[in-house]
Amino acid sequence: MTELMHRVQAGSRRLWVLGAAGLLVALFLAFAVGRISAGSSGGVASRMLGLPDPALERANKTAQELQSRLAALEVARQVDQAASAQLAAAQDGLQAKIEEQAQELTFYRNIVSPGDSAAGLNILRVQVLAGVKPQNYRLRIMLIQAPKPAAEISGGLTIRLEGVRAGHAVSLPIVFGGSSAHSEIPYSFKAFQELSASFDVPADVKPARLQIEARTRGAPTVLRHSALWKVDAG
Image (cartoon, rainbow, N blue to C red; front, side):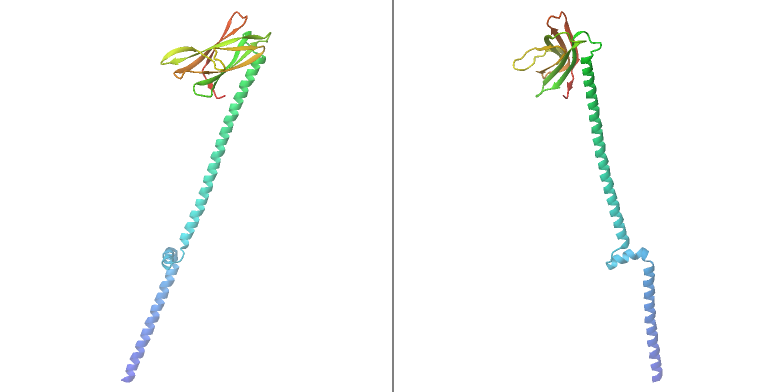
């Protein structure tokens, strides 16, 4: 009887050892399966264990690279815009310079060879520039003798400003400033002369054109010239 009990106890112990060993094998197999399927659950396991997540690190690295490329593209775009603006400004400046030189060339050609201009005194150019204060302007007028200067001539210019005041057309004599106000600009030259004088325009008048009369001493006729009002930059 005692021997039988010893055999039963020994068998129970063997069963318990075998059961414990089986449980350990099952846990190991479960761990191995988990390792094999780490592609889908590795990130969760890593976060649970407090370890870095490889997929998240790769995503962060890719995002940083894309951000760097985007910043480089933005800088390149800004550089292109600045270059385009500078090119456009340079083209505008060059075009303005070409037009200015063309005007100067035409101007001096007219002095040297006036072409179809009437003989005697001629008004070659009328220019209005902004003055030093509001409603103040500077007038420049170029006079020449055509086709060839014979002798020195002298005389004076009188100018009227045509415009609109309170809805009505007006024609006002221009009074030029200086040491003493005067309504005539004197001239005296042989080949050509540029006249310059400043004047004020009433604030309630909207200018439209200038009417110029040139009277040469000893000449039987008066030269008349009309110019549209246009204020140049100078």
